[in-house]
Image (cartoon, rainbow, N blue to C red; front, side, top):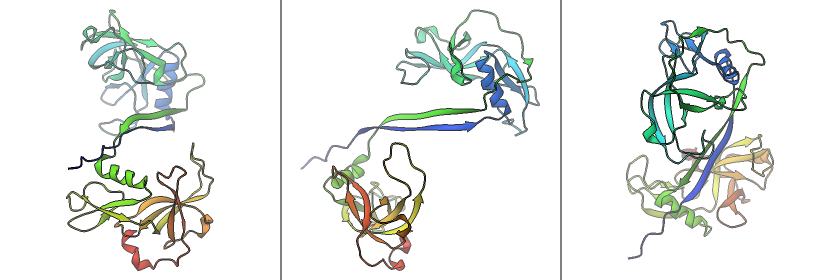
Length: 317
């Protein structure tokens, strides 16, 4: 018996900068961090929330009553991080801790610098270690560190006014992980490397899924019957892209379409090339143009055939 092919695995990075504007509460909070001041917000019931929010999570009432809390506090719970990842607060092992600052009723999540997990405990006293350079971000708190002093005084009213307030932030979101497509998509990707498109047929409803998913989401049964489809197909729907993506060497505008390959039970995504963007239409018959290394279709181009009749693809929209 021939053993099944090894499942593919590859590192994958998903990354994008997230830009957001700040309301008056968040602006005051982040600007305060730049000035070594930690602000919270008081609710109608007298609770002090740190980090502050602009609406009461219990009543949805608008919150604007800012107060200054201490830069010392108490660990309420924690978890040890033995292998910090790039971009995390510390390069050496540390604890993620929820810290209730003196004067606050809620806890703030941040890094706690400690020599080892045996040095961390719930209830331990800690204080803020400020970053040497502060810009108005949560990273202005470099981390927390152990502290033996007494609790600070209760919260004090604060007007939230600072010179040159921070009004917006850019957060660089990044996710690094190892992706495995599974057995069904491994077979699909290996077939693409041979310039073939292979789907899998559901034994119950007979729909051919491309790319295959390993199971039919409608019937809930495994799909193991492989079916070669295409290579030609029909444009079912499409959109015109007018914003150039970073690191993508494609001039705008261009067309991204749903393409129902001949023999497939649903449409897949693909870029349309070889034709002006304003001539792409529903029903256009297309064929793949393979990438330079031949591992996948770079785009699809018109075949020159007459357009497909709407009734032949209306169920695939």
